[in-house]
Length: 399
Image 1 (tube, rainbow, N blue to C red):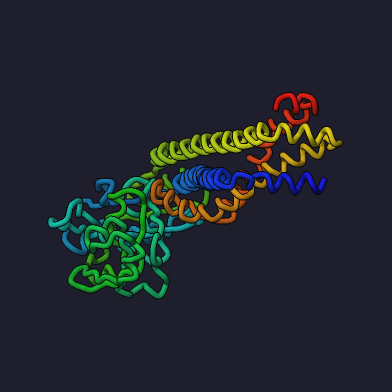
Image 2 (tube, rainbow, N blue to C red; image 1 turned 135 degrees about the horizontal axis):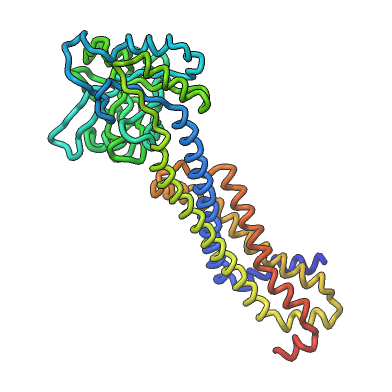
């Protein structure tokens, strides 16, 4: 048995050039297969998390305001209806025990005619609040791609988190990491700000804003007690309807908007991406299996006489089987090892293409190992069945 195992591990290296090409191709296939599987899982998970978040989210904005900006009729400073007083009413409603979170936001439009697509919004919020870029729900809750978000100690600091498009068009830096490292200056309302982070939403409009701490916003832009939006998160879906009814009754100055249907856009987009990732993974699985099976079938044809000789001198079917399984395992194992080396750069490339947080991690390692084992099993199946059925006479006659 030991001899059969040694022969199996040694056989792929009889043709070194072919073995190198096969291992390189298999490394790419296994690595990309693992990442596509992870991308599919991440897309499904993102949709599920988004659906749960959106179903419990209530948006309050000034009555009659348009949806994205949150601006209603212009009124003299101090005479606005939608203010911090509205926020206090929200916190005092009878259903307040069901409010898991309340975040207030203040907006200030910013237009730069010298830049393409340069309509942006400066958004003031308290540290710890979600970075909600203006737009549909599917590109709210922006994620940090470089640097950091706000900390409690930033409450009155002149610091900012900018969108990826804003960093590129307004500050001339393509890579967010380079932007943070360069500490490019930013001027808002005539005041200098330090950029501490870059966020991304996957949408150009959503990536074209600037977040700053709420207290700093009030000091720089002097909006008075004015608010632009209030986002209320309810503790569970079951309580949303009751909270909405109470808010509508107590807040005539506000439009109360629930957006459970808004997640459909994200579900369509991410669902399509998840399906494409799944189909791609299936295609890669078939490609890898065909590659390993082809190599093993070729190996079988090259070694028919060897098999006949081994059987003629008393080798058992078990030894023949072990030889081919070991050969398939060697080829697939080397492919898996190569995949572990190739996957980190592939992960960075795939993440830039699909804009999902696909990364080389423990989950990918499990997928790689599973792929290598699966290809070894599939690749050895036909040669094993064929080799067991060969008699020494048939093997010798075939050559």
